[in-house]
Amino acid sequence: MKLKGIKICLYICCCMAVLFSLQGCAKQATVVEYAELKASIDNNEDMVLIDVRPPADFKAGHLQNAINIDLSTFANTDGSLINNGEVLTLVVTDKSKKIVAYCFGYGNDKIFADAAIGLGYTNVYRYAGGTTDWSEQGDYYVIDYDAFKAWHDAKYPFDNSENYLIDDLPVAWYTGDDPSHPGGHIPGAINIPVEQWAGTGGVLVNNGTAFSSVVTNKDAMVVIYCGNMACGKSLAGAQAAVAMGYKHVYRYQGGWQEWKDKGNGLTPGDQP
Image (cartoon, helix red, strand yellow):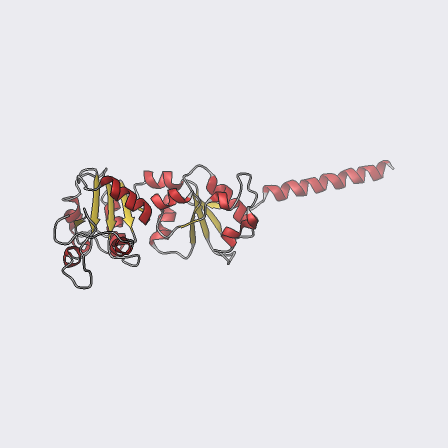
């Protein structure tokens, strides 16, 4: 009987050791740093970048190509899933797809990433520094229409010392003289055609002088736009502005077309 009891104890101990070993080896999301994530974004890496912050924060400024899945719609703070995590599974159907989650930098990205792994996603990363680190690095954000409109309403007419709106389209588009781009520009915008100061990938043209001679305050909020969602001029401009050391750069990706489609007025001519 004594030998049998010893065997049972040994069996229980072995089971507990295996359990603790499995718990210790539970898969964790890989943490990515700013430079690695920036390179992935700039190189259009095949991944799903997920902003897990509330929608209002997402619209006010998010990383390029990010989608918004608010953590509160996906998982509770203890990591338990909400509606079986369908807000993620309906969007990312391939569970081997690379996923990168980020938030403000306070840990919600980890809750999201751990829950995603629990759902069976096998290629999960998280940007632990989040928007706090992104801002400290001085990189640009994409601003959605609602937040852009609110900023425009609050700051227009711009004093051009703390807030700048930059139209980086050709002059004839800015003035409205090109028949393909009638009406002019968003009120208050200053025209600096991107070809004068930035090339593809944000490479500076003539040291960016055409831009820096107009936008003299590198601590100002600078919003850059071009034609529409598919237009790459505002992307090149935002990247170049960051390269020149501007600290608060935003890309209004919807641009002239979205502003017009939302029923807003345009200003013709060569004055802001």
